[in-house]
Structures are given as C-alpha cells and as structure tokens.
Length: 473
Image (cartoon, rainbow, N blue to C red; front, side, top):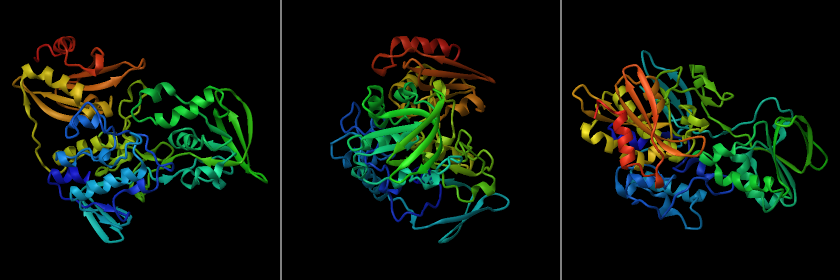
C-alpha cells in the first residue's frame, strides 16, 4: 500500500509495531510452509505483469528488478515457499524499494479531527491524517463464544512441535485453513486426528477457489474418505472437559444429528483469527462475521465511518458478488496486493485530487484490448469475479481505459457507460471470461465461451464480444 501511494505522489506515514518487515511470517504458519505458490519456472517472463499469475507471494512493483522477488529466495524444494523465505523477500522488497516506515510504533487510540480527518495517538506521538488505512491483518487469535471450557484449550498459535503429539489422539475444533494445516503437519505423528465444526467441508468450492487452502485440506480429507483412521466430522462443539490424562469433548452432530463424545489426549482450538481494530468500534466502525471483520464498501472503506479504509487481509471483508459461492482471494497476498493498487488509485482521484491517466482506446481496438486482459492479466485471474478491467464508453464513441476496479462497484454504483471484463469459474468448474455492460441504469451480464489453454483471443471470442458491443465497436 505504501509503495503504491508513493508512486502516485501521495504523502503518508507508514507505522508498524513490529521492529522490521516480515510481520506475521516470523511466526505463522505454524508448520512453516505457505499454501500459496510461487513458480520459479512458468510460461511468463519474471519481469512481466503476467508472471504474477504464477507467483502468488511477491508484492507488486513498477520496476522490473523489484518484481517477483519471492522465487529468488526459495530453495527449490517446493513451490510453496517456507515461512522464512517469505519474510526474507518482504525485507528485500522494503529495502530495495526504499520503503519508509516507523517501526516499533504502537497505535494506541483514534479520534476524529473536525471537520474531517483523524488523529492517531501512538507511542511516538500524534499523527493527523485525512485518510487512515488499517492494515493490521487478521492477526488476533479468536475463539467462539458459547463453547464451555474452550477458554482452557490452547489456540492454533499455541501449537507445539509435531513430535509432541506423537501417538496421541488429537481433536481440532474447527476445519478451515488453520485446522487442516495442523492436521496435515501432524499426519506422520498423531495416532488419530479428529477435525470437527458444524458446517461441512465444501470440496467443490475449495477446488475452484483461489483463496482455498487446497494443499492443506486434501491430504487429511483424503485420509478421512479412504478410512485411514482420521475423521472429519460435522458437529457443533458444546463443551470440553479436562480429564485425568486428557480431554472429553461433547458435541452434537449437524449433518447427521446425534450426541457425540470423544476421549482424546489433546484439543486445539483451530478457530481462526480476528482483526485487531483497536478502538475503531467506539468510533462507529461496524463489524460482521461474529465481530471479526469490519463492514466495508467495494472500495474497502468502512461502511459506517467514511475515511477509514482497510488494506491487506482485512479486505476480505469486502465480499464482492461471490459468484457461484466462491470467495475472493483477498485473504492472501496474491489477492490483496491488487486491492492495494486499485485502492491507491481510487484514493488519488477521490481524496487527493490527482487526475490519473486513462488511455484512449479506439473502437476498433476495444475487443482485442479486453480479450488480451482476460487472457493475461493476473489480477483478473487471482481475483476472479471480484476485480474487473473496465473501458468507459465516451461521448465521442471512443473508450477510455479506467483500469481495474471492484466488479461490485461497476455493477452496483458506477455512473459511467462502459464494459467490464473479468474471469469466472462456474459451478461446473468451467472457466469463462464474463462481460458486464452498463448502458445508463441497465447492467447486463454475459458469459463468453471457455477457451482451450485459457486462451481467449480467438475468432469465436472476438465474434461473441463484437456482438455484445454492437453499436459501440
């Protein structure tokens, strides 16, 4: 976010309570390996924008020498980087791009500064600003209310070394990313692993979702399906009791109703995280998802306190259209890095009076322009059905490239005639370019044909898009 703001000439202060770059990757994931890939050898040049499609862990940069840093720190053992490799590339990015940050600065309180703006009280004094961008991540351990005894159960962050669970029956409360990550790490050690939460695992969504922890889910789930001794259960946990040598877990089946009891050696609350929002709730910032995420507009602004924006993993709180039930990729670097770029441009135009260039596109070139982005733009692939490339239709009949923007904004509130293209994976797993046309107050949606090898610059796709843009091209 800081890099993108600086490139646009927007003065800002970057504050971090950490003592250097790297943040959460100094501690998490617990079992070292990320679930997002970076491919050292891919069908795109590492200095190109397109390479971001294959490298989900590097930050964005205009300068070719600062792009795609993550693969250069990887040892080649896996295309999922290790935690320390991720930390090292973030340190390198900050150093090489000369990011200016005040480290060791603790955000302590927030108040509004009349008539507009905010004052942030910090351990280094006051900071006054027109816009406050909160990028603290989903970094605070969270446990659900209503489970008796869960306060005595260690959280994911307290998990010990895998060998300490040797020959144990281990019960994980929760079967999302952190639960399956731990289960995957303990497969060689634990005698039996039980993962339980009320809702079923939706493998159909996981397989096609860019935000899913597929690498973590598949092996423990496969062990369950093939009868390897581990269990993945749909059950609501009611209470956890300490016994002489372990724990007794009481639950109610959900998909299959009934009382369930488990005698286990260890219990871990793999129940996820919440956003450290400080005193923003008192300022009027509303939340959802059991108070774990702030409610946001499509441009990642607080839905209730204008001027408070969010960046990083918190932007998953801006849900988008969620086509076919698929979430955005905003919980991970490969998604929220593009949100940061889009947000910086939005702030430049709407808050700081900076007029950004919108290159003109001739009507005869519009079809090729859109299909090229559908074929090669990593932001559309990594943020499917969430970010879209937009061409404004101008009064003189030409187009202006408005860049990428949240699809929900184009569909719901955009006030300019134009066309947006994005990528969508449907319920059957077919991948299509999706075209949205805005003519006045009317917005229509159209799916183009899927393409072999994800290539959409074909005669068939040109013909389909030409028909949709009839009268404009």
